[in-house]
Length: 327
Image (cartoon, rainbow, N blue to C red; front, side, top):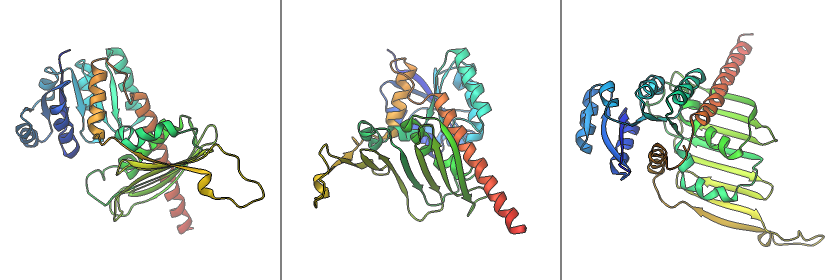
């Protein structure tokens, strides 16, 4: 098959890497890039040896697929334009600003017989891929995603900026609907919530405790899964992890025993592949109808719905605190 004619809409810090990697994929042909900042589009195009477009409409006439890496507030607008031009669409997380917009995109894509893939890149993290054979109905999940403050992304709460990565990952790996949400958060340096904690309860009894911060001194991306057979600890930043599980031996009764004889320790390490490259490669293969969509629009909508629920619970909690202080 011929390479997929593809373009990138939005070539800021993340969109640039989309374009860089697509330029290098043999299954894709990077036709061009677009950015609301025309100078930025031309600069990236010059660096990567492609074309910088001044018009989205013109670009869409020249391609069969796009990746969208514009600010979240413009995801819906750009995706609608692409779908109406019969283009397949990749949208960075979160899929849209609201579930109503996500629902409309899902309907548009179905009517046009086009695909939408959502950019939840942690699904392609080496540690996550390595741990999946060892997961066995986790009952408790704990995640911490901490980052130093940068102005980019502060137009939305940290829940939609960072926490949504772990929300999607946990939803996909627990595999059960959320039945209850509790959350609290604080604004520290921006006009929206900068640090947040959420507790999710799932049908079947699983519980997840999720913390995200963009005002930390050091980066951290860790997640742990506790299950009847033991637990898994993953460092998503390094792409490594550990499995600690009970061996198939009987527990000694009424005598001292060495715990090391009962617990098996397995080191996990990814294959070193760049997660974003794997993600874009999966999208191109889905566009060629060689494989299913890795993260569907419906899954992206589900993660967004939980994230927005968390944001709402945080606002209720903050208002409750304010009301209590003023009483």
